Length: 374
Image 1 (cartoon, rainbow, N blue to C red):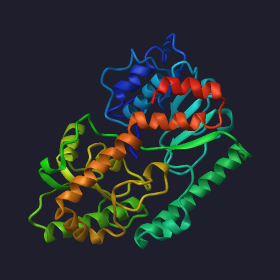
Image 2 (image 1 turned 45 degrees about the vertical axis):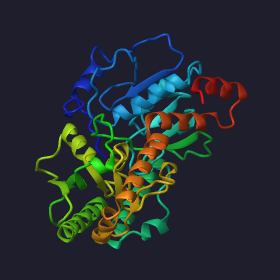
Image 3 (image 1 turned 90 degrees about the horizontal axis):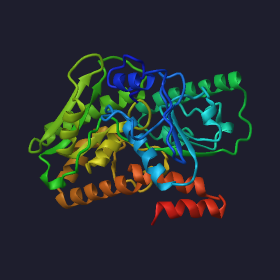
Image 4 (image 1 turned 135 degrees about the vertical axis):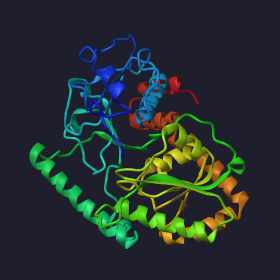
């Protein structure tokens, strides 16, 4: 996943400077809900004022999660709740006490040491590692690397437990958050039959050589399958941007959005762990998605993508898809509906409200439901 929060990190430099200005001022509004952002580069959480945010947020996943916050503020009018968006696993601030925490960026299935002090925790990257049988079912070059990663993550959990102590029995509500989009700009999806590119992929490609990274092994397999598909299906238009890790031109957010919106089919191999931003970005634009097997998350249930066990099968998978325009149109429509009803900022906000109100007093449920509407 792509995170960078130092004062010289590039796309977030202006945002970091904004929040660090005058010792990260806390804006106060007469609003019943409170929302905080705690960047790595800030010494403490900053209370958000929707009227004083930078007018153009940089192309990062921050836009997605702050958008969810805005929907929550609208839907939870009168609830008097506190929400904190943070990347910190262990740093704790008093505003987080009894707050709803959005924990972003953890790819190792870690639980924060402050879990017992918060009202609820929603985090990206999943709450539990994938079942062993699911990992063993992956292609072996990916599976054994994923197993090593799982062993490393277990070691990290054990070290953190030694440092912070066992969590014991914790009743804090916990839920999973989709990754959202990162590099995508706002754009309206085109009908799939009006898209000039048949198959699209953009990403980085590791240099040749041996690696322990499961994502690199999967990417190499995908690249080989894509090359074979291009050779076998010359009548179709393929567009791929495989930049090297250390060098090579990469698409900027505007170029990437335009290219993805022009594609009928988007390839989404796994990222640094078993999820990837490009899958969610392709869903937002209604592309037909071809992907590795997905982990078990609530938001992947009934996901209308085409799952491919081995990328060597890509030529046959693409041939069948591209020969059936009606199926392409149906999958594109269902993918966009999946985004709207499950992954969009409004849909995720409603999911969080459902989780927060489960088993809560009727008065709170009535307050929230009257604000949320049908």
